[in-house]
Image 1 (cartoon, rainbow, N blue to C red):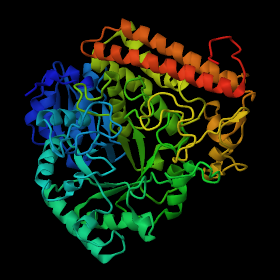
Image 2 (cartoon, rainbow, N blue to C red):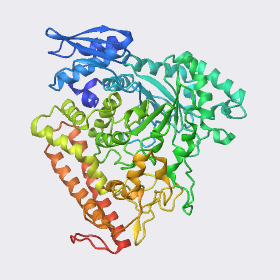
Image 3 (spheres, helix red, strand yellow):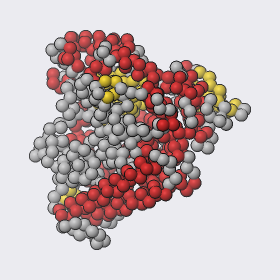
Image 4 (cartoon, rainbow, N blue to C red):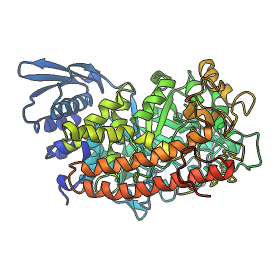
Length: 613
């Protein structure tokens, strides 16, 4: 059995041991963790009414921590992190903004992970449960330290034999896994197949069919008999060939409510993903605009869902692209419980090869969508079986920051990233500043050398790493930029597809008007000629060239900064190897994208840099 120091614990590296391995409750875990911190004395008092919340009060040479059953553990970690970082222990009361703070793992029972970039599954292998209990406990500890309280362990695209997760053959093992997470306040959730009853002799999956309703009621009773604190079920229905209520002429409110009623007696939540669109769209169809799909499928159903239903909506209207506007659906359902969905797995943002710190992107998102618009938050996991959990050691900053942002959406990216740098590597002064600046600028650098100014889907199809400007242009996914010799982009205004009409008036006006639409989103909302003059006075085509050359040069500078950092092994070697791949990727994106637009437009770079004929 490996010991703790064999595992890449990222920000928990400041804790040398793990006596909490034997804790049975969050209170016991809090006591065990606090006992490790030299120079920090904290007395703990349980106040169940505080739930996940806590308060910290200075008492003589130490502190008094009061908290609910899980709040005491969250408060303990918050105090320890501040102490280890050389900061003042935060005094006063604190509680999470969102009650449900979930991580969605896309792990398959065979052990592979859909869009996984950190090795194989931590939970499964060979069509069965296969995990290291000590390592799962380490994971639970990491999640608890930043306040994540639910983990969905299997892929939303449920592949056989993952159906067995809610069947009695696997339920005893599921109960054992739940018991490992429980002392850290982390509850399990399961992705289910909407048509599961048909695997057990039921002739239909029609949500209004009494036999279907009865089957799910009985199934929920069985599952909760084994895992009484299961958070609930997660469902992807009628999307990308997954079964759903549309087959029977029913609405998604019909489907979600049927499952929610089965979970309600057990206190379970039904999380229903709103990633529904026509994934077989003919490119000749100029009337259908994929970003409009979610709003059309769900907005009219506002107020029709059971109280224990949460609709999980991606942050943007497409699919976790480098830059998208806020999804209008997040702003359109005030009578329905909603969850905001981010993607930590770097599917379109560098595969955890390229460095891409996400907190600045989230901050931009919350500027257009007040946190109060949603009642929960979820993120697609970037975890895997690699020794450091996240493939690239720096990708751990996104998991760390997600937890703190889910707890407090007003958390400042600058402060969160700096805290991660200090806790993970103990850097100070110029070294800490250098790593902090590298991470803070990494998203913008990646954006510069990839898809420009709000264009999406110029990435290599299927794998989603590297440039392919025409890769999706004639595909079935509804993802087009329609670049020709004169212009590029989609007109999504009132005179075009009408997509902007889905937004509230302020955002609609902002995006419709070329004068107020941000440059970085102009090609998402407008079709522009290459000689269009941007806000900064450059033509569109020159801005495309400049961004890509700048992005490549910034990636080279990142490599120089990285080489000078005093990182420990193996992080140093892993980061250096991935940086070499990032530089190759940045070069390909720069050359391919600039050449693509040069060959279309015939306009040379005003600065005379190399673009290929």
